[in-house]
Image (cartoon, rainbow, N blue to C red; front, top):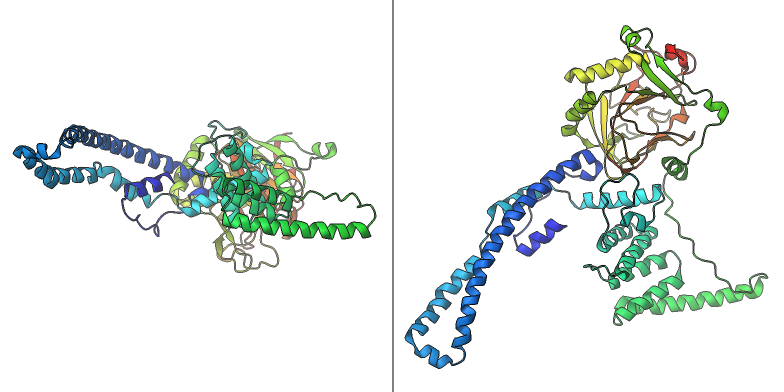
Length: 548
């Protein structure tokens, strides 16, 4: 917003068309980091511009001071002053020539570099979609992690190193985003926070009248007439001529009188309600499309189902030599059971920092908005419930990727020649991937047709960064939660040995509350000509162990 304001103040003309601009910045923290360097470059140009403008203003100020002394003396007796022919000549000269020179100086752009730089960079800066996406991400984090508006506004988030506050104007903007979506629950929360900060004396471009206007309507839409009336009266004390508020006041008073009459009639007919007590209106989030929303969010907060002691005894840490592979006999791999059904195994220190940096280096220029497979058509498309950017890397294009793929094949015993490409994901503000299945169900015969692969036997998920808060991988059907640990990977089967899908593997990537989450996944696919599923249940026999 700051850049837009500067542009308008300076009267620099119409912004360059954004039709070719790179959008969806908010879906990848990795790509958003580039914007910080862009902003730093613009700031350097702006400082140069300020120095040039200050120099120009200094020159204008000196001219004005000199002219101020002259006009002060001249206007005491104008006729006597102009009776001097030199003064008359100089007046003509000043008004015809010098004032024009001053006009040119005032209008002169003292720093072409700043203007041209801003014009060029503007094409590559975030747009309205990014700003709205980031706002919705904050609201999503508020819900998922049970945070009140004040906690977010004061920057009191777990794991933060750089505490940042929201202004009243910021809170107002969040409320407006919710209002646009007819989400009056969150409109109320954020408009109330904006009002609270204004009442505390915060200086802002947003006034209480505007905030109260939105707030009273949001409260009314949630059925709380008492509070809506109270807020409307407060608005009218600030602006008695407010047309909408005056209309609402009459309507609210009429509605309340009507309700009071109706409740009185009910009280006369129904015993036990003679007190006339009116219950408080309960505020609730909008019901959405995700049936396991509550369970999913509880798991994200670490409030999920806990394994019984008996089941916990089935979980072990061990070393694996990957079916007597010479490489792993000399250096066995550390394994850790994360869950029993479905069996989820974590591999510790399975990818090095050097490998991680190489994967990120290859992926970052290719990151694009993450897609999902349409269950009906099989075509890949973007979705609002997957907030991240992805890139796909093939084993043939870099030795590191080939080495990683081979490692997965050695440890799982599954042929990676039938696998999809390594998918690298970087999550954005509040980045998430809501509950989904990795495998294609019976009613999705073309789920992976576009990819040219069979159904997904198993999933291998690398964690390529630690996450300060949030970002867990959760399994709502069973209550499992696996937390990111840099350098580790988790593995599970999506299909039973029969080829039937294991519906307990429905999983999700929780919103990232604080931090930058990098992950990469390899889906190992079923091709009956090349690979068959291991027989029996997913058991330690799949992983030949040297130490229990």
